[in-house]
Length: 238
View 1 (cartoon, rainbow, N blue to C red):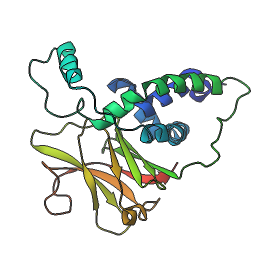
View 2: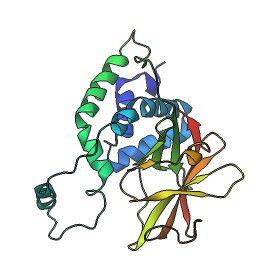
View 3: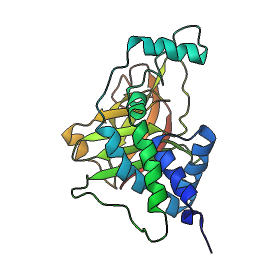
């Protein structure tokens, strides 16, 4: 009897999920699979561990000024958009690895053929941890991948919840038995790469969690969450 995990198509969906290439409905379907099926969660975590370092190592490149006008013209926007998804550094980083995404799709088709059981392993794998940050309905809103050795956290939107104008989403690390620690503010519909202080990196682990709250513009004025916590998720090894 075949399972969904025997098919190239399903493996390709998990690669596209990690790379942020699925539309909202498809991402929601995969997020439900992650919540309900341990095999799906494990497959997505493996692809996060293999592919996320590719994005982290892509250098930031400022697009030319005329690119914004061209994008807005093609989207039919009369006025410049409020800084958000299109101004997101993480978006351009992912566009920069578009060729890598195509290569990864070809790779998964090769790896899932009969007779090929595991992908090639690096000689010095990074120490990675992951978290699926989900709302109360269990649907993943963001995914986070943490490179412990580089002290970096890459936050990628899955099905992010919109926030009101004049409010920001803020990411928090919650150590076991401790108060929340602010990681930083980020655009709810865009990803972001955070450089983590070493003392914060030392608190990462299975006993800790990540959470997202809605705060005033610029982040919490108190150093602790002041608005509603809209998503949370435990940290686990990738």
